Length: 227
Image 1 (cartoon, helix red, strand yellow):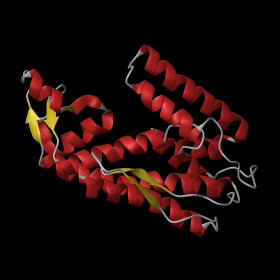
Image 2: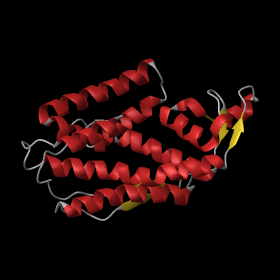
Image 3: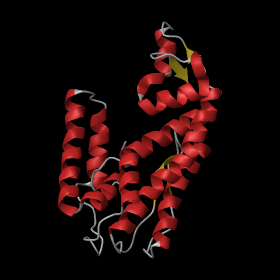
């Protein structure tokens, strides 16, 4: 699963890198943050060393990473799901603790249905194959990156779509919603909320031309990736 995860994360960052180069934005190559345990890496990143020329470039660079990562994450998850074990709903607590619920997210449920067909039911558990686990982590990383907050990819996309003032309001609202969900819905989300706040803040760097709006195609794509 480590190699699969590194491929997905690497594709994500290379999507940013090549799109930034195409728009003549100064950017470093991708770097992996090594971890001596568990997943083998804390993730990957690139450093953008110059401002985007306009909102279209900001949008293109931000959206390219998640799309490139999904190109590898979804096939990895589909293939890995076919190698995974299904545990029925009344399985022992020990087995269920090590599994993952098929209906844990809409996309997870859809991909499980495509990969496993009628053998999947809402509430059943999956013992994930390592490649499926890497694909699932790829989806999780993509989802977190697409939150419309600050320096995250979703924050850049929101700025490009709605402008600086409304983009900042969306960012603050998204961050407050994340903390509210952690307080009142799922306490386990609190760690992620603090990580997002620490890494992304609530503002992103504006492009040099922050006036020219996006065309219709980019706006449609923006809404699709948020969904």
